[in-house]
Image 1 (cartoon, rainbow, N blue to C red):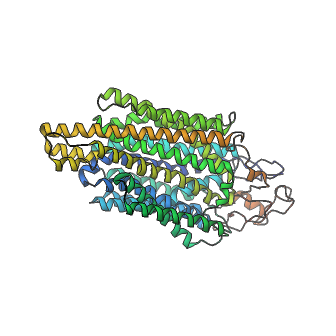
Image 2: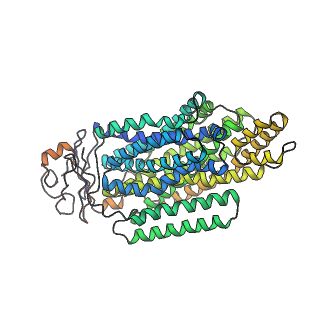
Image 3: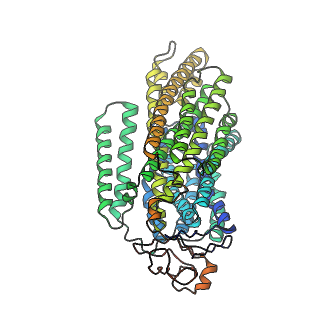
Length: 594
């Protein structure tokens, strides 16, 4: 039998005998609030930056390449280091990594706010990506080891996921207000008090967890994971913006070759950074791929919609933020409703239907006009509401399926894979679709009558650059140049939205075909759990009862259904317990320590 007391942090065992795992108590739910804070902050940071692009372009005058790097270098660095940081958290402690990352994120935010040039801002954003890489896998893996009951875990993941949407909803309003009263650097300074709050509350409410036998960290794998990312992304960006180029092709080929070498090395290691064996489970692989494609499309829409509202329709930053808020609020509600739907409908049905809603939203944006503020704002509000609602449904269940498929002692690595897909999708969305938009904008912005060729060339860099050049020209020439730039940008946005429709429809078809007949793994036991997993975590209260001896069930007998004795947890730093190593017949989840 297992102990499953609710509300006191007592833990339980989940084995072949079907005993229920522990139910989360007040401290666990309070810890969830702390774990959501970094998620909200990073989401606010990404949306606020989009609204700051026009003012950034005016004050720092970046080139089109610099502007893309300012927006997406954060995501590339973060995606390249997520797996490494997830594995590092399994080794040194996930809460400890969360606190280190919070302090570093605050310092990098201060540098970004005070950046005097576009180059310094690119560097600051890269440092933010390094710090952010330690925050995201820490939060999700701590959540995995805090909520052991599958239904409670799915609800916690829904709340965690709604932090992305909630932060994105808060970002436009907060960013609009900041940009109307302060300089663009203020959008980074808002990170500092939130980071301070995490540093104070995390030690009080979040229990530490780690894998006591994580194995050796492979330095070559760390280098390969990062080395594969940057040249591949650089090649894609250069091909999209400048067309066929030998350097771009070579960079892409080098990145893909290093990525292949990384995967091959992981298969041969006893302690890999990425447990590629998890991809043998169809649900896990499909969920990760679906997450990547959803975020790929969603984040790219935020990149071009903020510019469309402000620079094409002439809407103020604050009002532009309010246009997107209904969709972001719908995303929060959808993620919570998804928990209830998961009890009645299959994973394939919910994800497939949700992605059809998202595709419909992108189709609406294809009809956004170059002129007509009322019509343009209405179409953006409706289209983005559909995009965000479908994404909210799908992401909650895919994240739940990913975490349910992973063994508890590999929670950090599994959450890192999930977050890598999320951040890689976000970065590639801006890089690929953003580059397609830029290429289309440049191609469509031809010579303008009465405007010097040099001014047209300057306007082709970015839409914000066109606004600056038009203001410098003034008069009829400036108006003609800005009108042509608005038309070129809107045409590029239509093309980008159409491509996003096709991507999301493919993701919907893939999910429907590959997940049919699989039930709902986000709340049902996965094959890994059915294979004799035992889930056990010991709180400070229960560790006092055992006195640090071997962890067993209430009867003092074997743990799980294999008939083998439960493994013991080693005392943690503060008198709690770490995750225990497991035998082949039983895997042990996060033994928590304060």
